[in-house]
Length: 133
Image 1: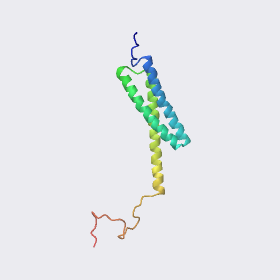
Image 2: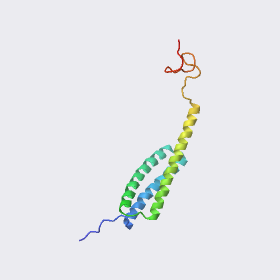
Image 3: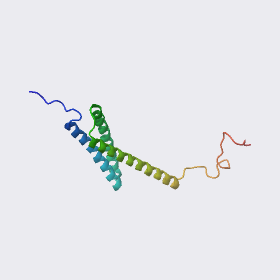
Image 4: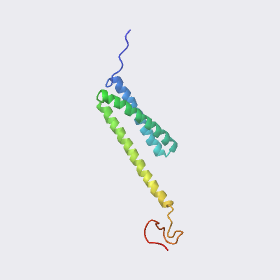
């Protein structure tokens, strides 16, 4: 009794595996987008962790497949789309974080000494400037 040879990357079986891996990334990207729209922080956390896992899994699978054969053009195109979606969400998070930081700074300014410090004038540097008597 002979067993079937293991699937080779680039074969239809390997392409199906890559489809499933990429499908998981796309599903978690969509889930993260939906959670963000719903402003559901718990779902955002869950989807972000799952997306990270799916991306790591996809990078591993696609790297191995690329070493042994060329990737099919439709899969390559979908992978590039998923990559651009991740980059767009990352940029959106960065902008939102910067806007939040600015709002917090306006509402809760840092504790600078104000106009006068405990020695009279505005905070003075002890390393330079005029000599105090």
